[in-house]
Amino acid sequence: DAKTTQPTSMDCAEGRAANLPCNHSTISGNEYVYWYRQIHSQGPQYIIHGLKNNETNEMASLIITEDRKSSTLILPHATLRDTAVYYCIVGKNTGNQFYFGTGTSLTVIP
Amino acid sequence: GAVVSQHPSWVICKSGTSVKIECRSLDFQATTMFWYRQFPKQSLMLMATSNEGSKATYEQGVEKDKFLINHASLTLSTLTVTSAHPEDSSFYICSPTGTFDQPQHFGDGTRLSIL
Image 1 (cartoon, rainbow over the protein chains, first blue to last red):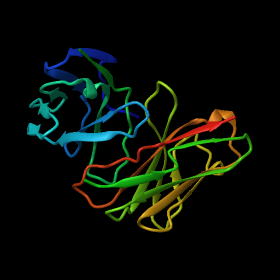
Image 2: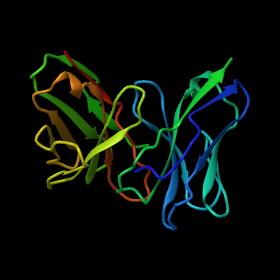
Image 3: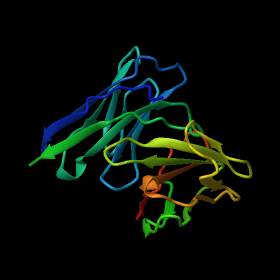
Image 4: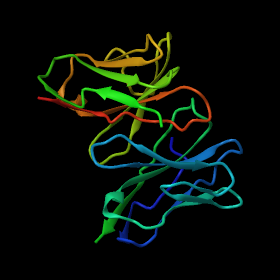
């Protein structure tokens, strides 16, 4: 079963930062937080992941709270192509199955 | 990043037909393969896990005789939906995984429509 909860949907104005929250209060010490997104009729696309520290890459930033019970994915300048369902998943290193929650449907508005 | 090729991307067939879906990892060796399915407006649901050369492990409620998984090599796994019926219409997605410390990647999915 999924170990994360996310808001069902969010809107964001084009060009503004999109902040997507995720709660994972039962995360274990050796579990990572992964973020994927799924654009309609495609497979999930990897965005970013982290264990304890905040992470940044060319796509997004990941902010993990000190107690690791929640995190926020930040898309710094949302574009229309960022409209997708965003999934927050907790899991161990590669080799373990992912259990997807319902995700957040992000709509970027012109 | 890792390259995953899933084929076909879309298939329509008559009820009672068996359909084979292929998933290839093009630039890494996939010791484990995860198969998911996704019904409209729902999230991905894990169906089964297979390790190269071993029998697959199926999630509760997934019929192993209905969904045959073959993972005979480190670069290819197949999912066969046997005697497909309209209720098997769904979006099937593979996720091969190999070395640790690499985020998992997913195929682009196969949309299966059974008439």
